[in-house]
Image 1 (tube, rainbow, N blue to C red):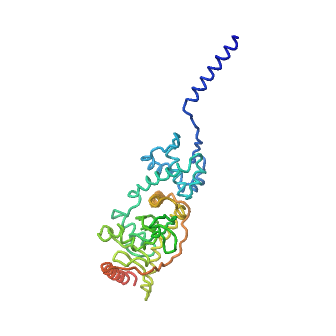
Image 2 (image 1 turned 90 degrees about the vertical axis):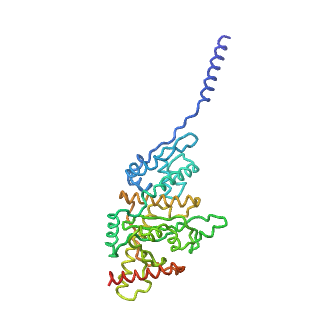
Image 3 (image 1 turned 180 degrees about the vertical axis):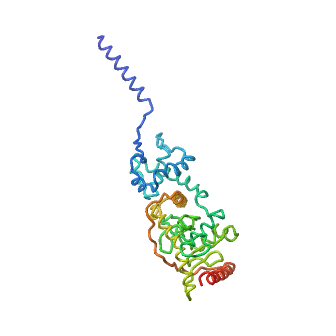
Length: 358
């Protein structure tokens, strides 16, 4: 009888201890495998498009200054992994691939992390995407452009590229359908001689013409006000202005042929820029299904990261060869004021040919 009493008391104590343990908050152990330690330098570069030193010394501090820890039911995700999740998306364009590499993180959490990190990186646009500001920097750009094919006083080359998107739906979806019948955002970029990005506009629907985007951009305003000096080089889709030199459609003499050759060779830097940029961040080459606002911010964030790579010479792969080509587009409608500017542009171009390419 006494043994039964003792047994019941012990059993009651055990049940009480179990109840106490069950009341304690559960602790989980996340697989905290650190990609910086797991991958070698080459494998890391292939997956995240930057070297380990670039991540630790340049990009991670940018994110850490503003990133609040994103939680998954009480399990905090370190800022380093948040950054690597975003970089992995830019390098693949696939949430599923990201979730496969960084284990135990739900896709919805990846979406939230991607949005937060993307906005932080895109917020650095004024720091990393800008025209040369000092006289010394301007003359360096002039000299480096001149060394390409002897075109004088070039401050940048301008062109647009289409980033494919899924149909946004709604009443205005068709404005995003471009002339190739795909849905896209038409992104304007001004590039430098070393394939860096000086300016980017990533908000216009795919059906908008390159010249229209330029006419409504701050770049044109800055040239009109005289705060930017030198020549922009563009293809035939742009009007010829006193500060925007376009190629001659039908050159008639040797001087005009030399002008066209120099203009096209120099302007080819922006075509190469698009190739290198999209190769480094393949999400830009795939049909993006994010919200329109988020897509624009992702494009800007990739531009910021691209310029960081150019600045610190942390390159990914070699420059693909882009053949020289002349893009003859449909004529541009000009109102009376733009028509007069076009006449002035033709006069400046004629004087440039006679002074420099004879």
